[in-house]
Length: 93
Image (tube, rainbow, N blue to C red; front, top):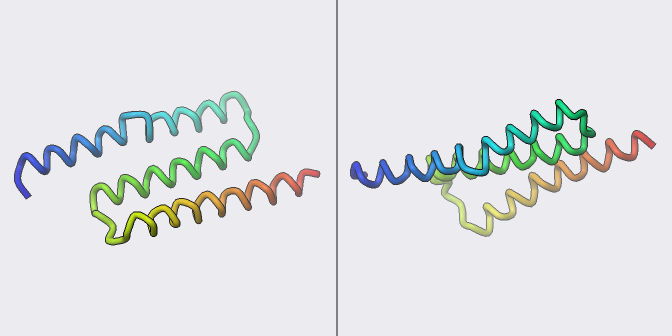
């Protein structure tokens, strides 16, 4: 890998971290704690954060899976958190 390619990868990774992804998700999590939003809101933010971490890991280490398998992984993560939200919602009633 040449210096130019490494620099380009670091720019892409820093764009994910400081762009509208990781920093905004951490800000959303802090806001949900400060303004005392519900647990379900925090779970949505955490699931989004996990997806962003998967994207960062894929950018750096190039996970050897196809785009369809990566999309299925996203759906599985969101489905797990959706089930957790539903369980919490039904337990409150």
